[in-house]
Image 1 (cartoon, rainbow, N blue to C red):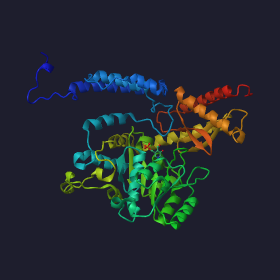
Image 2: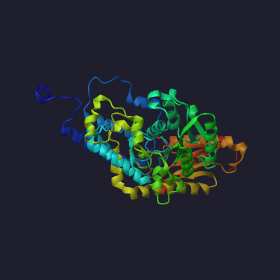
Image 3: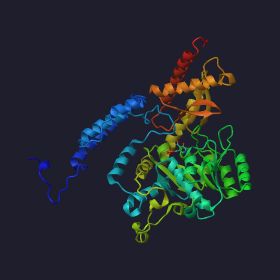
Image 4: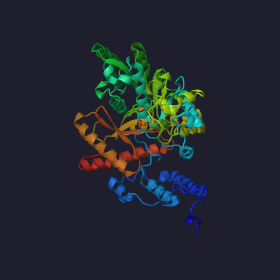
Length: 505
Ligand SMILES: Cc1ncc(COP(=O)(O)O)c(C=O)c1O
């Protein structure tokens, strides 16, 4: 009879989910080795294999829920292989799509450590050191970007960070008890942001019951920045119609081109009209730390709230978002309820941060750890260097495209560059060729993404379909940027030749 066959003694418990310390150690070391080899191999791998959903589902098979378990080490080996070979690798040096960064390897170890402790940061006494680490992380993020006060909360990402600010603004600016009476208690609350505002604003207006019609989409200028004069005009018209404007959203780095709204002018307007000024800096806020940050970006310091994504330009592994607020009372005012099961009267004897009362979540994970460790590992100067280098690489891409006779460089802001392929002999300004160029660049992007050689995404600027590269990737080098241009031109030429075989080039 083996030890496992013997019945457990009174002080033993056999739990299939448990691993013995030795099993954990062995499986953990093997996994760390495998992840290290994977990270090392990234440049040699395709960015993606562009497999179809059917191909991926076939890999998983359609067997039902297993009745019995599988040993952990075999399971981890198999799963690691599956993920390494069938993922899209946003940590690849030539991944420049959307606004998704390479993740700092230390963050993976931080997540292991956080899960090992499994702190619940909903309530301070369930996570004393972890809650204080979150508070310090939030203070350091605020300090890094020059935002006063250092108050706020971490969340899953940009959408959630913006929602939290939006709800704080709604409660602070409604002049009736909106948390108890809801929207029936008052006039129509209206929301202001540019046409380039990320789609979180629609979800926020929807889930808070305002409805998306409450959003006033303000026109932008030729650089895709919100026009303050158009904002003023719309505010006046809405007030005259009996609406109650309550929040203006300025974006610090929009998703299409990285343009930064004129935040200083928006802050002035909000001060004059007593509106909540929110800055969506999910992408661009960390660039405010650069010594040469433009004044408009630095003006995020005047906002009532700022949303920022450590999982974008602080290179944390997904997920990590952060809301900063000027007045810490506004978060509790928007989210706090005091159920009897939390024994808050006792907790008040030892004041602490009960984060469940400052945001949407109740049980909360220790996502602050990877950000905190990143900030300590790299320091202010390390982030400034990496962000500055990302911007310089995006500028290199723009410059090279601008001097290439088959490329049109279209926009460059922060670390985003927009460009498109224009075959020799065609003119970017000829309206008769506009549809062809849009179709050609759409096909180009699709082929490029599927090639696995590199990955960029798209943006539409003034009806032009552009290829959009966003460098939030500390693995990208100047050679990768040069290679990207070569790939774009090669694919562009091939597609044009397929479409216009007889044209002279
Ligand atoms: C400006 C901006 N706001 C909000 C978001 C949403 O952030 P997340 O995807 O982390 O929820 C993004 C994402 O790219 C963004 O660029």
